[in-house]
Picture 1 (spheres, rainbow, N blue to C red):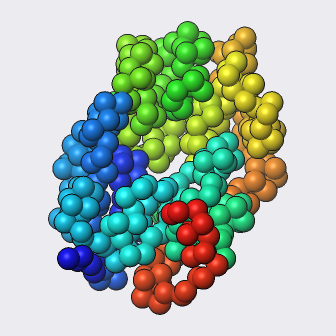
Picture 2: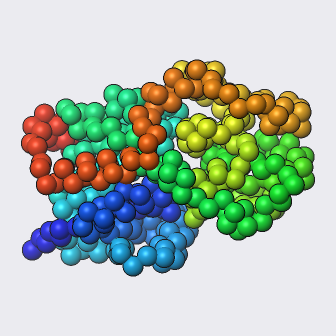
Amino acid sequence: MEQIINKIGFFINSPFHYYLYENTINKLLEKGYECDLIINDYLLYDPEWKNMYDSNVEFIEGINREDIEAYPCSLLVMNKIRYVCLVSPYYFDQLSTISVYNIRMVYGAGYGLEKESFNFSYWNTFYDTILNYGKYDYERTNIFNSGVIVGNPKFDKWFNNEFDVKSIKDELKIDPSKKTILYAPTYGVHSSIDEWKEQLIQINKEYNIIVKLHHGTAHLSSESIRKDKILSNFNIVRDDKTNTLELFKVSDLVISDTSGLIYDALLAEKKIVILNTNKSNRYRDLNNEAKLLRKVVPSWEKECNIHENVQNILNESPSKNPDIESLLGDLFAFKDGLSSKRAADAIIQTFENPKRNQYREDLKRMLKL
């Protein structure tokens, strides 16, 4: 017999997802709603992804809080248990069997601009509510009024200035006499580490270089060579267990490639540079959104003088760029530190005051979602 639990679940693949949800979970708990983490334990049976599952479990076990629980997804499926509402970052096959209402919390504006075919795909039809950052993703995922613009809940602590800079620097062992650079490459064939490793090593002694591993590079077996390149050449390396916003807080410059982190760095008003690669250059030529981004953010070719370029950009006085402000205005509707409150309210509204959406239900049946 099917059992429905009057709780809100949050589907989690990696610590990256926990930081996406954390502020919204806190707001829901404040309002008296119980929340659980639902671990995607199906990763356990895939050799490519098993390490990510193990790392995720280790991270969850280390979370210092007593107000939420965590359960494996397979346990819910096996016992025919459904949550009244489940929040997830994108579609998984198991979602329909473990929840009554489903909500998508969009993650990373960059997964729109540079990976639109995935982020704005047909499976968005599955969701009863989609929590959008702003106008850009709302226009691309709103299906018969399923979208709600709430802003970026992950950034509430940033806008409310809740990070302890001293403790972050102490944990990272930052040398106060040097400027700090955060290098955050994507994973796979678009990663810049393969072509830019030697140039980055050249400036490693002049600056505190923090390398933030993409969760793919940190855990996938196919990424082991790239991971080894980073671990053997850089001293300050963090994986997805570290909140990227903490690293932004202590960084003077952010260097990336095609990672969606670029857009988070823009929202945080950090100086940022894109490292071009042979692969990303071909991709850029086919992608109008990638071209647009490189019009407002400096991008470097590997033949550049990296010493000189880094020095120049660090010496530049901060200034408002109208093109960047326009882009951010499209991507992120709010910077008021209240996005998690809006997200929590939209989640509650979804299951407490459900509205029948016949057009979307028809689409779901046609798409077999």
